[in-house]
Length: 102
Image 1 (tube, rainbow, N blue to C red):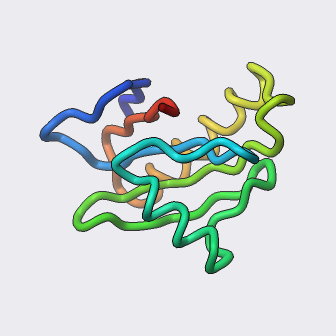
Image 2: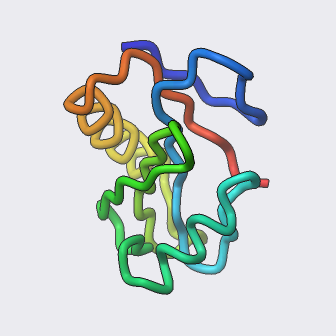
């Protein structure tokens, strides 16, 4: 599996997008509205380790709970990335893009 961290999404080859979801940090565009709606429904949670699978048209969006943004560590990011990659792989994704917050 190929994993990359990006500031902007490529126009093609998008199997899955991973978003870190942390307390008081808005999701990056273009998925902010999707994540806010799913959070309001209880599908997305900021709890550390929580995974949520969403869809934006044909794109899989995996939200990974990171807890309090001020307490996120490199180790927490590594673990979150591993969980997201495993979930994406189970869904058949070959490439995932970790979209950095705005």
